Every structure is written in C-alpha cells, then in structure tokens.
Image (cartoon, rainbow, N blue to C red):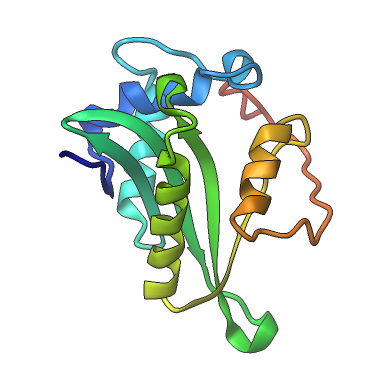
Length: 159
C-alpha cells in the first residue's frame, strides 16, 4: 500500500501549490491561479529555495501533490538564543481532508524543526478558520499569544 512522501517542493509543484492556497474562502480572494504561475509566485519560489532557513514542502501521493506548507527556521536572542520553527500556509487538498494526512504532515514538519534544533514551533491561523484552529489544538498547539499584522502593500503594488 502506498503512502505519502513529504518532500521539498520543486518548480513543477508551483501551480498545484498555488491552487491549494486558493482553495478556500480566504485564499480564493488573495491568490491568482494561472498557468504558467504569475511571475510574483515564481520570484517568491526562487527566493524561498535560495534561503537555507526556508523549506517549502509538499505531501506527494504517487506523484500528485495533495498538501503543502512552508517552514521558516528563525534564529532569536530571546529564550537564550532559541531557534523557532514557524509553520505557514498549511493546505490539504479538499479530497484528502479527514484522511489524517494533515496530522502526519504536521508531525513531519515538527520533526523537521526538531532536527534543526528549534526549541519551539509556532504557527498562526486566521481567526475565521475555526476548523483549522481546532485541528492545531488537537496536535498540542496552544493559543498563547495575540497576533497582529499590518498590510504594507498587496498585489504587487510596492509603492
């Protein structure tokens, strides 16, 4: 019986990753799904691949990408110089939700953080994603902080 392989993304995965990011109520308003991918995605992908503290990963089942996430390994001074693992952009294909793929993928991501000697792993989730929040809590994540953000620009408008 085949199982998923969790691996670093390759350029050929980019269209599917963008589709996964767009496959929910919030993502559908923020992402632009085109073939080939818009140049902003291609530039971002190259920047992620070039940074040794970034890992864009996919859940691959027999050559089909069914999930994605991004790990950032962040050095810090607080907590006696502790490194942190930041998990972002977690998405599982609609057809694979409820199959334990998300649990296995997050456990794999946590192991990657441990392997990089991170002292903690953190993530954020939009407050409207109640199912995602319950899922993360079921994996032992605690809602310990209030997060804030300020949009500086959007959709390529860097002015």
